[in-house]
Image: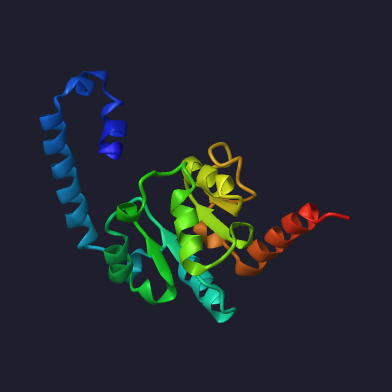
Length: 179
């Protein structure tokens, strides 16, 4: 419903719809989304993502996915990426969406990792804000104007390099260490 409300805000005339009409629209939107998900396969993996996941696993690092979708497990299965993840947080497990840090803190807690030792990757301003609010290292993917609060920013997933992300994280942590 939250995403539907954002869509409806684009047209003031639609903001006056009844709750019942909104429910019908939300159900239709979800049905169309699920139809699209059915068409997903490994060819839809964004450039650089599988390489980054593999590099993380090679280093023995734990990986969690935090998604606002209740279909996160299914999407990962369709993409063939589920085996890379140690834990998946979806919308059914949190009461507050991004920019609240709950998605990220639930994942870290499940993995038993202290928040400052975590690195989060996001493509939205709300996601970067959530990572930052959790006191984790934030990597933004996308437009610098939208993601200027990220600790490290790349324009596209193809630029996500494991060694560079770790180096940026280490530099930031070194700045925080007391003399």
